[in-house]
Length: 332
Image (cartoon, rainbow, N blue to C red):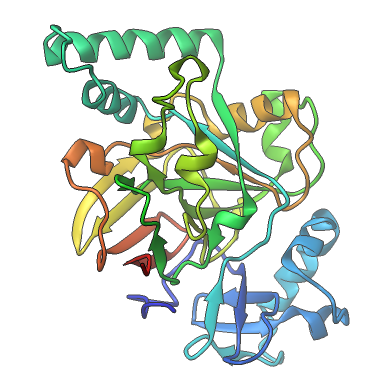
């Protein structure tokens, strides 16, 4: 199921974006979208019936000029986006997630997760968190872990809240989409491996982040972040060349119409390039992989208001369009 988006043709930066819509009852197709709210099926345009967005990215440098040509060709078989279902724009093989990457967000979580017997004042706790982040930035150590592609859902699809998730929370994030294999790339060259950007809402069940049965092993990201539907993605992949500065974008999430997150990517501790480079030092990034760059301040733990049945989340990032998802309690 899905909710009707506020504006399915929400404007994105540049002449075109890539997505994966479908005609009701038919298979999804790789599409080129223009801001007027129209799309073309890229399979006939490239004469490749099995074409996918991921296979396009595998030849990104080769196909990018052709995509620009198609975007300006009004003789193509354009169809209105209205009436189509918009799915997640890509099926990645790997999802790299970055935690604790927004200064204000980390401070808020540090204060929210204080032990009941912690005698520090709020101000003292915030100062300690700020010092920790300054040290991490100086040591150039982003925090990156692995997510599952099976958690991805469409940008307008319902999010099922598992019955076991006592504290489901939102985390709207800028996601970089990898264009070519990247292994041990430098910070200076890292953005050369980014095809474009999209929106990800990296939901987290706060109650299961830490293993209470064995605190020595730390966080449990499998349990807390990878339920089906826990990563609404899209609607579009906007080419990197259309985003002037990924370090200066507005990230906004509204819950039932009320702004909860409203922050600039300027608040990131580690830039997109630093996160991509860091992930590539240990793993080989593949075309179509996602590198999520962390969530800004304003999560549910900060507000003391977590997700529940019937909630509607509207997420947007400058130049990338908007997504709208409704929360639905898991059927008992």
